[in-house]
Length: 344
Image 1 (tube, helix red, strand yellow):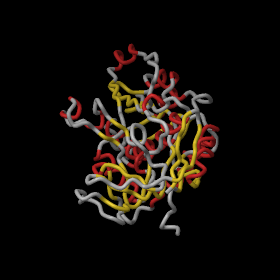
Image 2 (tube, rainbow, N blue to C red):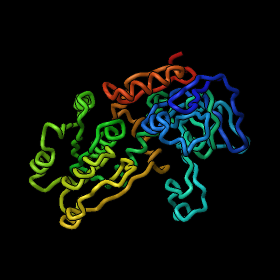
Image 3 (cartoon, one colour):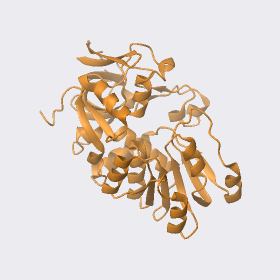
């Protein structure tokens, strides 16, 4: 088998490796496709070296086919098509005991604290493996993990049919949030400055506004009769987004913080007081969000295939990172890790 090994300092080496046989409570998966995400790019740039052990295999967005299972595994079997919910909770901390294992106080992320999916055969804990239906292509299966993020964000935001939602940031997660919110019946506007993404959003039937060219606050107020939107999803992790997110909601509107702010940004707390706003954090996902993502993707109602910009062989992982760094003309890049049986 092959694995893409991160060796530090933005160095990637493709190496022949020996597959890891599954323990009694593990599953070995032949990885069909793995998506490159922003977290992988941060790892590649060395910004998360404190969380990994070098050399390291990245990757957590994936689809594949079960190759073998441990003796205690009963919910999947060899030949099953699966995805992985890449979380390992301790089960003992206050968050876990309260039923919130996805935000465990000692949470481990498969693909960061443990080896990830950028390899031909990936052995993972059985509890993380979820089956997908035969009707869902393995390419689209590789989008389930980020789609589950979007499902979690929209659920936290308590979106109702007919409400107005504004998504700040039209990257992969922002676009998926917009698609899920629209599927739930919301009126959706995305704030985005990248021309490629604006054009793609328009083709997906999502209204996109460039805040550098148009006053989005004025536009939202005009569209909502002066009330403001019902919910804002902040996905940019930028100080500009933090400033804008408080200006858009109606009285008692909601703000869902999706982006990760490494440095605390200035936030207009007077606006929170004045309009009695509610701000919510949304981190990764729970199993019900994965199940909802699988159902939505399998329904065919979301144009997920149009989010896939390119598919590279595993050996071209570094090219994928460079394309993402360019920032232009890219939404989601997949890696073909072992060969797709649906295309072979």
